[in-house]
Image (cartoon, rainbow, N blue to C red):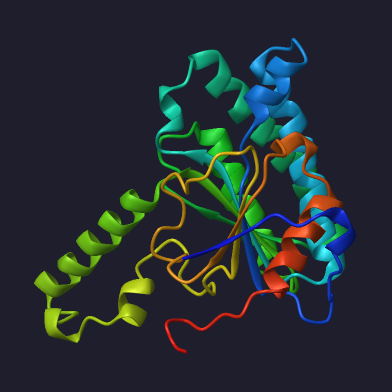
Length: 248
């Protein structure tokens, strides 16, 4: 994994003809954003949700193929019930609005994670947006919901083992490509760039398998304040790297 240093705004010159195919973002810092303003954490999540809409639209407008965001992790259930409920409520609101505008926006949506613990209405909304998305081409937004990288790998390993027991697979035939087909991200290219706002320098169980050769960009900017210009800084930093994938 390569880590990208921050660059001043003046250097954020992006070549929009040579963008990475896939950008992934850990949307972190909502609670701290709210605390700095004397607001409840739920207000931070509301601001973060609105910013997600802005950044996702910008990614579509500049021609990015894939955007993956970390919306809710398998560990986030440990948060206060009120906060979890607020996050799920915001997601419902976003999906209802997205469904009503999908024909206009034509953004594909897909969910990575175990949706079974979610309430039936939210599960149905997730399935509906994915179903509508099959008719569109262009930018695909992947929302990691009740997602954990380790959980994903374990699920894939168990699924492959079950296929071996049934005789559909042979243990000796397992390859990286075969294993990847058992992941939530099957069919989606690995992220080229992983961005984490908020000043934390860790990946927090996000896309562990897929980000093996991703470039990483960390910034102190909190997610609700992560603007299009901040994304451009990350893209410019990425374009200044030489990706060798273990070679010379």
